[in-house]
Amino acid sequence: MNATLLLWGVLFSSIGMGYFVYGKKQERRVALFCGIGLMIIPYFIGSVFVLVALCLALLALPYFFRV
Image (cartoon, rainbow, N blue to C red; front, top):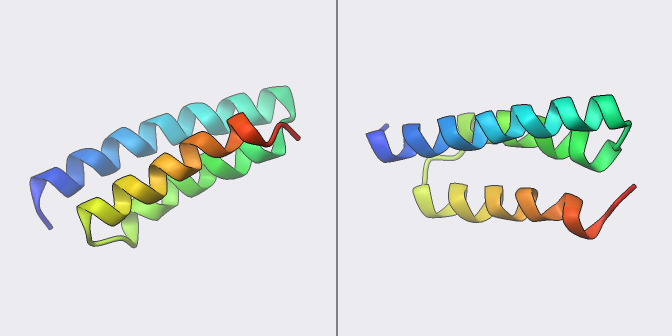
């Protein structure tokens, strides 16, 4: 595990925590599940490019689906 992967993981996990809290308080399921995904995914991805691409997709998902 390198430092770049660790720092990206910390960044996306902290954003995921914000999405989780927002989704829980506003009762927005997409934001809630994207927040959970952003907090969990960095543990399982070993490539920086795949991690960034997948997390950016999860960051954009609540913008397009407002449920």
